[in-house]
Image (cartoon, rainbow, N blue to C red; front, side, top):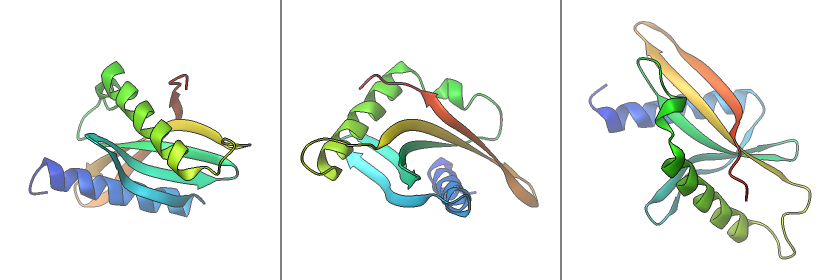
Length: 123
């Protein structure tokens, strides 16, 4: 991989393929709310997951999502919900924050770990 940005985009593509193969439908990629970004927004069976993708060579992916990043992701998600849901509120949709960790492996299929409902923002 040429640089961190390229590695991250590759990881997002791998994560997207993985989630689609697991039956998720992609609603948005790289949704922006000012400086904040949600990597993936996917849905399946009444659940909308805001997915943070971490492409890592070593350990520590979840640890890299500190409280400030979680607040920013929650704010971006709240805006997406306001913009995307019909008037009257979210209805029966369940929202959660997931993390997909993609680890490249030389000459082999990447390792993919999905952490469902990784944290609760309280919105």
